[in-house]
Image (cartoon, rainbow, N blue to C red; front, side, top):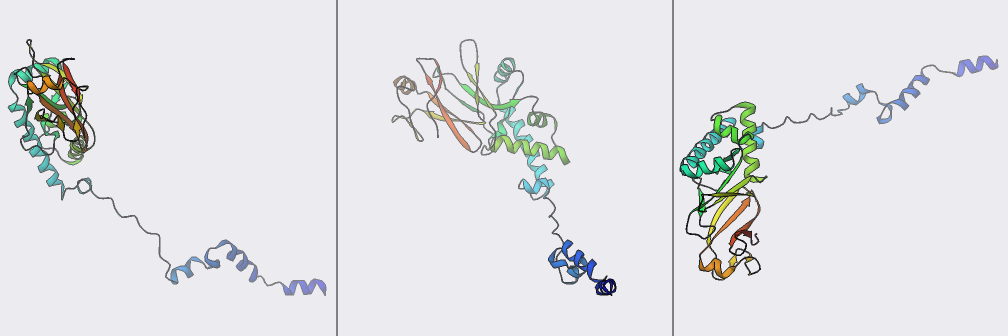
Length: 250
């Protein structure tokens, strides 16, 4: 009787249900019940934007049109450089390519020049990159790229316009020709002679910086070299050290 009562009190249908309830989420409801109750499937990640959309273009054709315009602007810039200046730079820095299109605000783009060492002769400030860089090679040999190559070149152009400093080669006149110096930056500009109040933007030039009286008397042009959307620096000739010295920046 005892054995019989134990066997008769055990209901096989109850055990699997208990085990299943412990193993399933939401109180043991099986997947079919969850689906019937309106449970949402996993969200599908939206597809990534095409590269030209994430770069601010309406289409790949618009990105290509910008690149074509940039190549033409680069050609105009190089043609505006005097032949002797290009020859001097090529001799001093054979692996350097001037890129006037690095300043997005330039309308020419303009060749930056002035009397930066105050000797009455024109000096030059030329932004650029190594000739083997992606951007320099593209501008000199790929006037109408498409697909992945257009994406690479468009991103490189944006990188050096807005994010990373390139290089500015400053050619100062001397009796033996231009002497070239290198400074970090992408966007040089001539700010004209040092003002009488010695103020350059938020910078006050002092005698500790340069020989102020000499610079004002000889109307030395102030060279400004910036980069992208970052602060730049003012460079002014110091007759005492006979070099361009930084006098601050903002």
